[in-house]
Length: 330
Figure 1 (cartoon, one colour):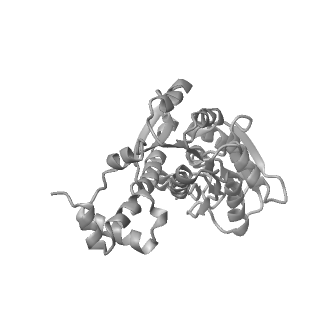
Figure 2 (cartoon, rainbow, N blue to C red):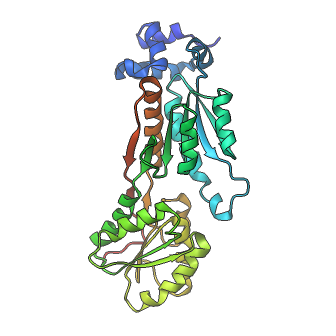
Figure 3 (cartoon, helix red, strand yellow):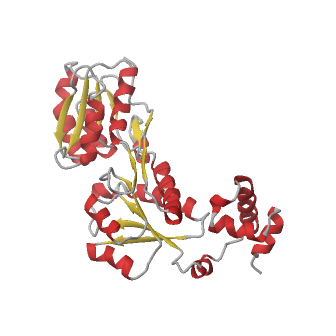
C-alpha cells in the first residue's frame, strides 16, 4: 500500500498539517521541518496527491515550462539541445518540492499562447528563451509568469543572465593572465542583443579597442572568421580571442589548426556557454558558464512566490568564468 501523509508525519516527527503545509506552502514551515519531511518522503516513497490539492484550491496544480516550437532546427541549433535538458532538471528540482506539477508545452503562434488561458492549462508560466513580443503575449494572458535566460524589456517579470558581465569576465581572465592584444569574434551584432551585450562587456575592460570581426555565427561562421584573423595572429598583433559562443569557437579552432597556429601557444581563446562537448576539442576550451541552473531554480522559486503573494520579479544572474587549457599566461 502507498505510504500515507499520516505515516510521513509520524516518521518526520511533525503533525499531519505540517506535512500538508510543506507541500502547499513551504515558506510557512521551518527549514528543519521541511528537510525532515522531504527526507522521510524520499525514504518511504511518499508522493503527495497534487491533483486533489489543486481541486481544493480551485486551481490546475500545474506550472508550465513554455518554449517556442521549432519545426526544422538548423544543425547548429541541435547542438544546444543539452541546454533544455538542464533547464528541465533545474525547474523540476523546485517544482517537485511544491504543491504543483510541471508540464512542458511548446507553441507555434500567438494563438497558441492565448489558448493557454482559455483552456485553463496552468497556474503559472516559466518562459524559456522567448523574444520580448512573445513574453508580451504571455503577460497579456494574466497568468503569473517569469521570463528566463534572455535579457528582456524592463516591464516584464524576468530572471536573466547578465551578458555584459559575461563579456567583461572574459576580458578580465585574459588581462589577469597577461594578455594585451585582444580580438573578438561575433556575428549579427545589429540584430542580436545578447551578442551586443557580450561585445560591449568585453571591450569595456581594455585600454585599447579590441579587434572585432562581425561575421556569421555557428561553426561555419567561426571557421571563416578564424581564417580571417589568422594572419594578424601570425604577425603577433593578436594574443587572445574571445568568441561570442562555443559553437562559433569550434569553427575558429578548426581554422587555426589548419593554419598551424597553436592554441594556447600562439593565441589564447575563450568561448561562451560552456558547452560540454567542447571537452572533446584537442585543447579544452575556456568558456563563460551561463549559470543556467541558478537562473531557472531562481525563476521557479520566484514564480511560486509570485503566485502566492503577487508583486514583480526582476533578477539578474552573473555568469562565471570556466577555466580551460586554451588560455596561457603571457
